[in-house]
Amino acid sequence: MTIKNDTERADLIEGGKRLAVVLRALKEKVAPGVTAEELDDLAEQMIRDGGDEPCFLGYTPEGAKKPYPATLCVSINDEVVHGIPNESVKTLKEGDIVGLDLGLTHKGVIVDAAITVTVGEIDEQTKKLLIATERALMAGIAAAMPGNRIGDISSAIQKEIEGAGFSVVRELGGHGVGERVHEEPFIPNFGRAGTGPELVEGMVLALEPISSMGKAAVVLSPDGYTYRTKDGSRSAHFEHTILIENGKARIITA
Image 1 (tube, rainbow, N blue to C red):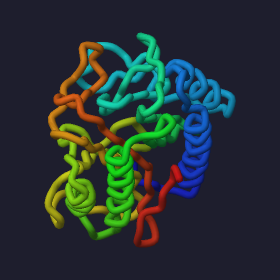
Image 2 (cartoon, rainbow, N blue to C red):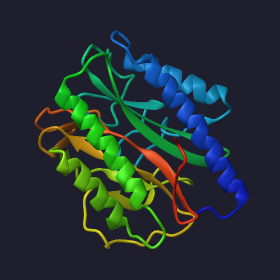
Image 3 (spheres, rainbow, N blue to C red):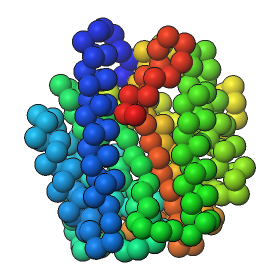
């Protein structure tokens, strides 16, 4: 999506604020003993109570054999992304990390964001993984300015994650967003600066660094959605929707 008028811009910004409120509430609810389905129920209720629509529920991405069955993606420990919260019982326990990935549609405009949350106390290496991945997101955002290229975002993200001693999950990455859940361009979390499509004013993008504590390889679970690290190592994921305007990136889902 490229913002064309003040109405689209206002709807995008309002949608981002609403999504951020829901993600904050989900983060506060995360605790040992809470189930993934409880988090999913809360996300759907809050989105609908606000007059919006959950955009993941019923969405069928390219290549999928069935629509996604939930509002929220809940990915625990070695689950990288797209963990389904409501097809089996998934209960959070002390020391887990859980990725919460959520999108909503506000007045026809889609916004998308994700956070990785700790369940109680976690070990030092896992803390470093989360810090590095969130820093990578901010580095990618800083590189998202008019005249730069997709590769500048990709390179900035890769340097942060690998510089901290972790691996970049290469099969998955960011994307355009706004009119549909996934739009062009695809934004890899690795690459060479100065390459790829040029960034222009008005672009709406979802940047989402995805890292692994071990090796980068991932496998798709039999449910058709949940990616896991192949070696069973923990993974972290952070995401913001951004709008490129006035020579820099504005975080819409802050």
